[in-house]
Length: 486
Image 1 (cartoon, helix red, strand yellow):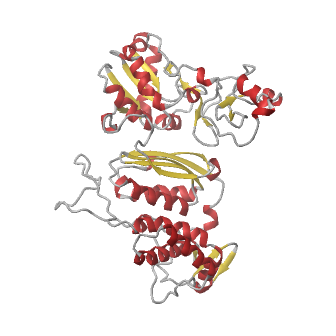
Image 2 (cartoon, one colour; image 1 turned 180 degrees about the vertical axis):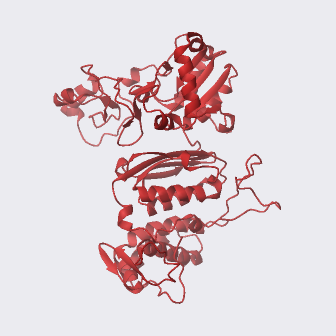
Image 3 (cartoon, rainbow, N blue to C red; image 1 turned 45 degrees about the vertical axis):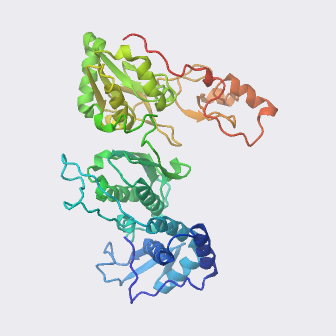
């Protein structure tokens, strides 16, 4: 929560600061239309949030509120400030770019003519926020959704060591842009990197930071009225941190996960039956031990080919597709193979199965469709030596996380066991390549012979080439593969 200005607290000494005037003018030029009266509150709120993030209690973990605002100091830039006026001057002189970013995020919300977020009613769950009985809309202020970080050493939030969170929540969001602004502000406050997608059908995120920050992020998410149906179990954790991503990207999209089908036509609400990791494990165990069950069941990997290549469940059908947006066409092409089958679906964290299973169910050909709740991530937490072999691919700089020692893939060039991905070395290709240490020492760093030859050509190694999603060799791949009769 922000630090409110009160008579006993001096106003920030920013009005006479040249840096502030320049930055404030830049903000005004970037947003010339909104009401000027709202610019002041946005500026003060952003400044106050920054000041409070540097506030530290002198006595143990006692909060500043309990101390009546006394016995606190501020730490910033490896300096300690005992007076409020001193920290205000320091921030005004040294940190206005950060304050400006916070101001812009808050100002976008305050500048809206009708800043309202309507929460839909769900009669099946009393914990889901509902509109007032008289039909009126409830208003939310973005600052009320931001955590109090006054008890945290701000330098700790910027540490590299920590963890990566993976989560999603399908829920009705009428104003996704408001949630987007809140998420941007929240993630910047906690020094996160990562990716967060927001749409009218929910939120999907993977973010990295230190453990103190990730804990605070989870608490903040769970306290938000739209996400109170979530629990701590919905956040998958793995060792990592802010270094696992290049930057922070938060945006609003039509789909919370890109399947390429209008969410209004195929909804997550029509998903398959969710199985806990224990239930899913028993299903696969029965499948492994019984030939008839194996004949009547399709264990379907909903991920892309480069994900299942380095790790998968035994006896699975792994579609050789490049993107999840190809999955609907894959189902349509192979629809006859799914007829009267029991389908067990899985993916990394569960989100792709939500709408993937809904799409499969909409075809009305399967005997039943099940999906692994929490995905491979949650399964490996309980069964690290279970039926999943190899590594789990993740969409960040780590590329994969390991739960067992099995290596099920091989080097692209020599065929030796290998499962550590690297980007293709050519500047115009973003394919992933499995090239072992020995082959890399030989200069075999590209995803294929075509790219390797281009890299060796001086005419093709000019800088400035935009990275392509597919190189010439992968363009020859069958876009929608045909499944062999099961």
